[in-house]
Image (cartoon, rainbow, N blue to C red; front, side):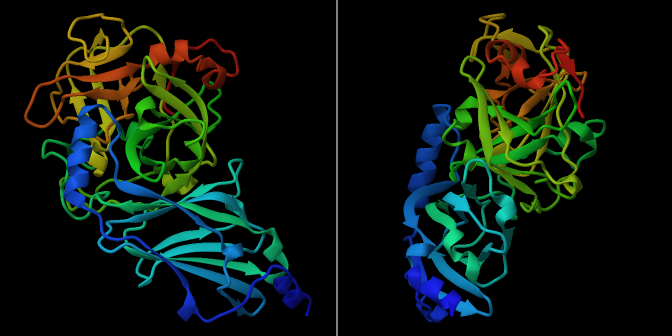
Length: 414
């Protein structure tokens, strides 16, 4: 009786799943969206993979709950015909112990892991990874005695119009899978890099950053133009190990290893860099490493880039010649010295989506992250990386990356 009294006090009633609430979005004009994206990418904007829809869906305002044993369950369906994917931004998220939030394709062929009170965080938000379906069910199960403790509101739904590779090779043919023998000797650095989504709509690349303590604090770095600010940092989703199983093989990367949420720490516009701290550590079994870096003025005699071209599986690129200091987009050296210029790649390239990816020198230390450039398969145009030296100095990265006060300006990959 106490449980039912509590339910009544919350104004909830219980009905069959036949009357599940549904949110519907019509099909998108994909061609127009792709044309717009091409235009925006030429302006240097981070590419988008989804159209964000602002919504306000709160289970505690719904009348569609079902009682099952000692729990009560709310179910909501989202349909968007022909969408490549869907993702969900819970702009209010705090679950009591015993509550479970599940997101799965309505045909139950795909499932995002269960979210619980263990996912409560300083942002009081939760942004899901993508689920490759156009018909998705959201299910919240709560112990009866904890119903009044639920804080949950779905504030945004991302309707995908292009995808993290779907069995087809979308990036240029000159890209080199990290599964290829070319990456031998760079395995530790490969495991520092993630493909990321922000705001449930834009994608880039980023990487974990070591610090002088070597204590595995989850510092993460990407490009400033990837739009991670203090307000959008909670929406960051990092996908680890998204790579092919075989060199040149099927596009079979998995999106199951992910972290969600972060806190913004610093941004430097001159070098197009942003540093955040992830809300949680990557799981040990994901074998995520922390990139070393060089904050001295040297830029090395060769370079390696590790990235996700066009949000495809992870690739590696090689510059066998010396890099040069320059301004962003500049042809003369040293320019304003805020960027490291790859004159032209010797093997591999970069593409939209590679933005924010690390550039390593011959000592396997980061010397910059990708700002932009004209490089692509079939040309010898340059790429420009925001210089780590500039970011470290201007954004006072010492505050986080050398909190121990060692004064060291170089750190190796952990």
